[in-house]
Image (cartoon, rainbow, N blue to C red; front, side, top):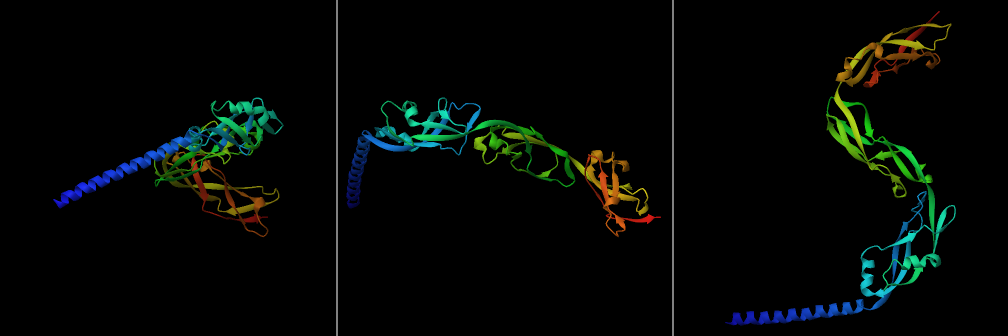
Length: 319
């Protein structure tokens, strides 16, 4: 019986507490609603949205891009300006301009600002009263795309030739001073591992730091590459000497050197000794030297790389 009474008293006490809390919440709400229904003046920073800018001009981002506006209205109307960054349109169609700046003057443009607010919102003050916007002339330029890649192939595989980009260049539009400084547009890194089949993949462009000032015709490009099995081969190639003076005769050894090359299996059979040209330039001989330096002067486009295992060609002058 005692336990039952305790439960009843506890329940009644909790009910009283809940009612008390309810009245506290309602009192708070009434207080807030009362304040929001009154008029207040507050300052808000508005981000400037440039509209009707002539096509041949672009407003640079280092220009002033905000203004502070004092607004008088009911508390309810202020709430939206606290929740998100407010924006205000500035119409450039009739602004005065110099060779480098547009000038916004409050006395001339106030009515256009006021018209962007509801009738029950009063614009009290705008700071600053004069704003200069730096601009530049738009320029158009085709810029090559440069692939940034870290591609690792499965053992015995490699790409045939160069990687293809589609498109291989993009149109850049923006301030002349900015566009002229852009040499190329790099891709974001393409990281692939254990590749053993053809590559065909879209990749985003890595836009310059000042990309807010420019527009680019494409945001992505496609990277493609023909991947095949590769092998290494060795072939003997005759050595020739160039730029030998007319009154000088030389004898050199070896007259044939092995060239080690790396190519795809499909192109391997097409490689022959005549595909390469190994030369030594007599003009490169250092004083009192008795050897020539062989170099590969010509090699097929179908091979990935080639090297000489012989680094020196011994010679003597024949009298």
